[in-house]
Amino acid sequence: MTSGYFLPFKKLRAAALALLLLAIPAAARAEGLDSGDTAWIITATALVLFMTIPGLALFYGGLVRTKNVLSVLMQCFAITALMTILWVVAGYTISFGEGNAFMGNFGKAFLAGVGPDSLSGTIPEILFSMFQLTFAIITPALIIGAFAERMKFSAMLLFTGSWMLLIYSPVCHWVWGGGWLMNLGALDFAGGTVVHINAGIAGLVAALVLGKRKGYPNTMMMPHSLTLSVVGASMLWVGWFGFNAGSALAANGTAGMALAVTQISTGAATLSWMFAEWMRHGKPSVLGAITGAVAGLVAITPASGFVGPMGAIAIGAISGIVCFISATTMKRALGYDDSLDAFGVHGVGGLVGAMLTGIFAAPALGGYAEIPGIGGQLWIQFIGSAATIAYSAVGSFILLKIIDMAVGLRVTEEEEITGLDITQHDEKGYNY
Amino acid sequence: MKYIISIIKPGKLDDVREVLSGIGVTGMTVSEVKGFGRQKGHTELYRGAEYTIDFIPKVKIEVAVDDDLADEAVRAVVSAAGTGKIGDGKIFLLNLQEAIRIRTGESGSEAL
Image 1 (cartoon, each protein chain N blue to C red):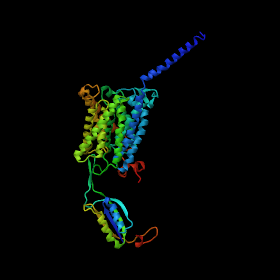
Image 2: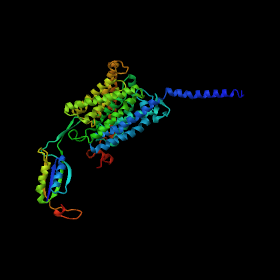
Image 3: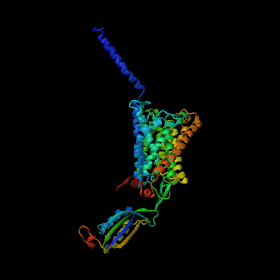
Image 4: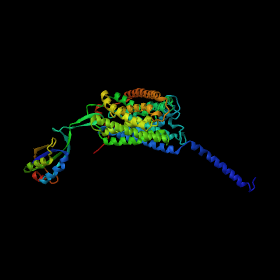
């Protein structure tokens, strides 16, 4: 039918068909990628990276002596770079690849199959991978606090690199990647076990294996710049919104509540450490206030998606007091040199947080999780914590011993006295 | 000539400088030092670890004067730097063998 009368009808039919074909992918996109979620997680990724460089770097850097400040900054910076490559090559796939209850397979090694259009929930999978990378960066960076001022740079690179692949990634898989702890119902919203208990225990083992700094505890080893430490701790507080609220992987009410409980817990912990120190020593200290804040941030991490504001007050207040005792009284009583309290704050705080999550996640106590009763959930949290402690302790010990045999872990006594900045890097932090 | 070394409390530096200028002492060298005599130190606390700090910050002022100005200079420092409390500091007098102005080569009292 080629008469002029029917031509417009054919054109109309063709146009209708074209519109329909265009509409189908749009409809599919509406169920897939959410641009609000994606925009938030891009921001959260930047916030969590900021927590390591320069947040943690400055926090730790200010706490060491002048002659070692660069070594701390360098360790954080180098870890950031190293974990980035190791993560995209193998870490991501071990953590989040399809696998078994223990670890992911190597199907996504070198980010195979992860293109710009792959999705993970409502965000691009590549973005999910980068967000998780920032966690894989900060977790080994936390450990450096335990062996500050005495570890060889080469040994530190080998240890943190192998630790991320062999300890962090499997535990990440257990809890977040479809592994056995996830299937057990363990509640860890943003990394109480995966990040803080994991790093804290590794730190304790490292402190014990490397031994005490020369002169500890009788020689004065004062923070060379609490000013830098306050700046760093403040960056950690702000960045932690990305850590906890970002772990909602969406821009929604859960993220909003996670942000709120993060803020509340940190406020409570800052005050509880500050008042505890005020009562014990007669004056509140800046170092105490900022350490209390970190203790509150650590403890709320596993709980952040599951507890309510009042639960957050309790979690923060308790963590501030418990970590105050563990980083001061307990550390001195037991005699180990956990230089910057990686275990005292992150290990202990993570454990406190993981267990309290089991309690305050209960709807009866203002929580939002479906749990098999408080007793039942506490038991699950205990299993998760105990398994992480055992695996991290044994695994870290083995890695350290192997690296010690290969290159030696600790600098020489003379290098330690001169300082790591000059001996490991030929540089001084300050030249005035 | 005499070389006068004064160890004083840091907050008193401006007062001492003013008074010395007033009696005709035209130059001085100042350094930040630490030390102790009978003044007790203080404690500092870092995460539960208490340190006793023995050394207290002080300021050292060094001036070179003619013999006939020495007594007046010492009295000036004492009046300006003293508070009556422990920790005011000390003054040491040394005999100065020679003094030279580098720019011109002058020596002796001309160089002061």
